[in-house]
Length: 470
Image 1 (tube, rainbow, N blue to C red):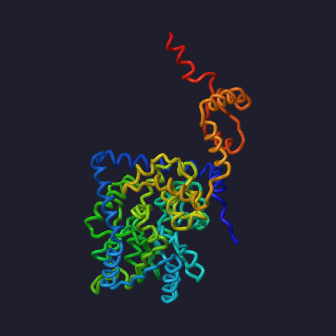
Image 2 (cartoon, rainbow, N blue to C red):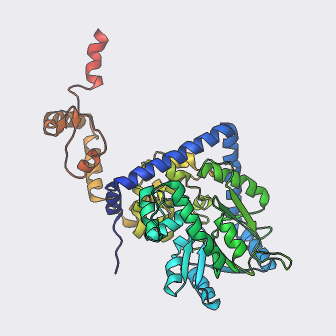
Image 3 (tube, helix red, strand yellow):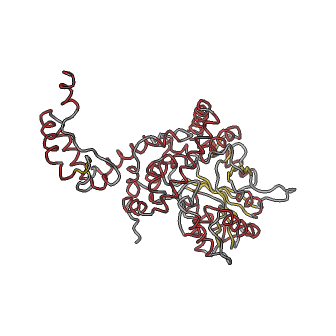
């Protein structure tokens, strides 16, 4: 049986990959700067009002999710589409693989979809002989590398152009230089003819519109629009919470999504389609299937974590998080990295498997501040820590000992003063250049990345009486 390495092992491996860390820091820094410029252009007050409106929209939808899902399903069917309500990822995969068998599909072209990554759709389709081609540039890069996304909107953020060139040269008859323009040109030429031979097209879904049954897909490459235009059969896979009442709310969310994700005023291609082509239409699918995935989402309704369903997958919290910026996305272990992943993974996959991710945070609140729909992510991470301790009925042994010792020392003033005197006297073997440079585990790990000043000869309250006299 394959056993996943612990979070500690995963982040230690990440910390040793300097190429990846440099690429992630560069990428997140660029996205943060673009987002900041976009907010400045809008104005702080208008941006705050935008966030309030977006939060209200998402809260309303989540609190009335059953009504909007029923309305969406009815309208999709009315438009000539088919709907699968999948309670688990396995049910969703089974529905899509059975459809592929029925259609005798050999070539499946996909646009970017985090939910299909979540339910491991690609391996299941490949296992039954389908050739699955990712048409999003970033997704295609990591497909060639045999990896999973490391970022929600920039899946290949951890790769530099030299690594991408190496991957492309494995499938290219001619050597491609590590020049961005040339790499993009090769990807364009290589993928373009794939769109002309699609048996089934699979897309993600940014938002589904309840009152019309329309599906909204946002891309900067236009690949999803080609799939929905040229595929005879289109399958859209969406999380059950990715729904809006009407296009009026969509206008707010699209503007907020683009600015939060990349700093753009609007994503380049915003496609709304209602499924099966009309009789007099020249393009569009002949058959449309909407797969609505629960996979743990409904369990959060009515709980203290309900607001996590507000997420619009912009990736802004990842770019703001100092932990993500220093370990990358793969260290989180599941498909959703960063602060949102540290909340979603234990909630969807179980505390026993991913509960340790609650500690993958400084609790600085940068993620909450960055979130366009005002999800209190750092509060949720703190709550998950409490849940983990209560579930296991204990904290970590070293942590328990440390807090009991701290409590005992600080219980009386005399113990505190005595402990300070002893610490001053015996700290000298650990001190270098007025800093604590050495220590036993786990302090030694902490000291690798942080400075701890040595205890001074006298504290401020000890010298204050002499200062007052002067």
